[in-house]
Image (cartoon, rainbow, N blue to C red; front, side):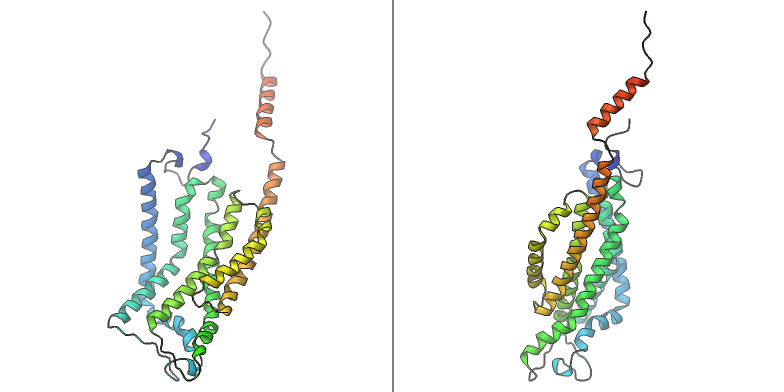
Length: 291
C-alpha cells in the first residue's frame, strides 16, 4: 500500500515531499525560485534597455496623438525633464518595467512551481494553463489600459481650456502610464483567482452566482478608486471588462462543479468501498478445512 500523501509529491522527481520538508528546505526552495525569477527579469531588463527608443515611442504615443492645443511642441511632441540624471533614470525605469513584462511567463511559472508542492497531482497539472491564462489576462488588461490612455489624457488635460498648454514632466507622465497598465493588468487576473479557488474546491459556482450583485457593485467601486486618473471613461473601461470576466469565471466554475458532481456520483463513498473490499476479500479466501 502506497504512502497516503503521494498525491502531494512534486511533478519532478528527486525533491522531497512537502510533508517531510524542513523549514530550511522550504527557504531553499523559495530562494531557488526567486533567483530564477530575478534572473529572468534581469535578462528582460537588458533586452528592454537596448530597445529603449521603440518602447519609449510606444509609451508616449497616447500623449503625442493628442490635439496640438493640449500638448507641448506644436507639430512635434515634447516631454521635459528637470534634473541632470533624470534622462538616465528614466531609461532605467522603463527598462525594468518592460523587462518585468517581457519575463512575466518565467516568473509566473516560478511562482506556480513554488506553491505546486502543496497541491495534488491533478492540481499541479494546471501549471501551464495557469501561466498561459495569467499572461493572456495581463496582456488583455494592459491593452485595455493603453486603448483608453488617449481619451483619459484628453479629458484630464482639457479641463484647463485652450488658453493653457500643459507641460508634462516625463517621469510623472510615465508613472501615470505604468500605473494604469499595472492596475489594469493585475485587475484582469481577478477572474483567474476565482477559477483556481473553484477548481481547488474552495469556492462554489453557486456562491459566485449568489454574490453576483455585490461583486459587480464592488468592481465598479474598485475601478473608481484604483484608476490613477479616476475619470469616468477609464473607470468604465476597467469595470465593464471585469464584470464580463466575472461572468465567464462563473460559467467556468459551473462547468467544473458539474463535472465534479458527475465524478462523485460514479464513485462509492469511502466507507462503502472499504466494506465492499472486505466482503470480496472474504469470499475469495479458501474455506478452512474441518479437522
